[in-house]
Image (tube, rainbow, N blue to C red; front, side, top):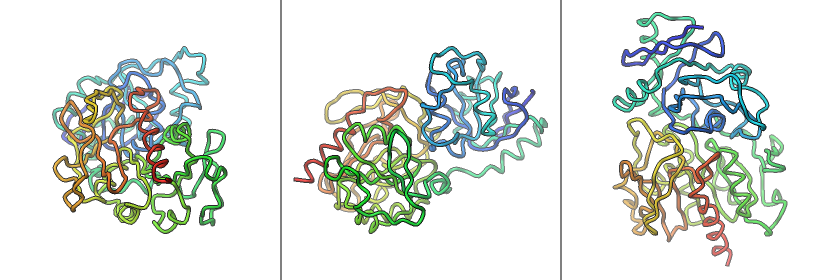
Length: 383
């Protein structure tokens, strides 16, 4: 079925739908990973975006229910060069096209993804519309111009859990809708590190990674108050990844400010940006973002280069951490492609965060040690 993608700057790309009739609108971005399309589609950090895969063959290993990172597809559309309809994988339970169709998500192929990626690299991520219904370039470009910018939008409320949940048998175990959790929720007492995770769009593999590091995790709505979190008597606070601009998420920044110094804090991706704002830093929108499983990051303490998975369109300003008087707040990791900030810490407040994804699934796993580092911080804080 013929389709057309139109960008807000007037550029159009002909393509074909492999999921049938439909339309989608959002910010169009690209991801350079060769595998992991199911994890990418279900990552809440992609809410509001249409994802272009730069690797040309997508769908070749099908889909598997064990590979999801949330309870549904979060991306608005999937854009590929060539869709493979005959998966070869012993774990596969179906093909990608059917998986997208069941959730009403548009998938298009036969699009020049190299040209689209180059255009985004040169001009920045931008609003776009894909349609199999409206194939008029003028009309579609006009509609693309109306797509809201990611900057200034709070998408966290769209993806955060409404009900607190524990992690049991590799899946969420929801508490009662009216329950205000307290310290009685912990099943393992002091046998495990008790972690209160604020859900700004958390990936399931983050929870699995915390569990592997010896933690029991309760996942809380993004708007949970600092008082409720303190009443849980956790050993540590985790700040999750999530979509969009951190600056409008003022309620989370206010909560984090009240938690600084209370217990060790670990943040990932949007969690780092919100932590940075809480400590007086600034954030800004990156031209075309970092998305893929091959981003080089330097650990400033060890000098080691880690290959990391990333998915973010905003970053913390390298020049502002510590500008509110936290003299020992500083950089721990740096992006080797463009020198942007990839990690920060404040020893006096017992907090640290990274911009990339150490829980990356399907990989790489160079930075998985950070979950053990968080557990070690909680051990020291207990003594």
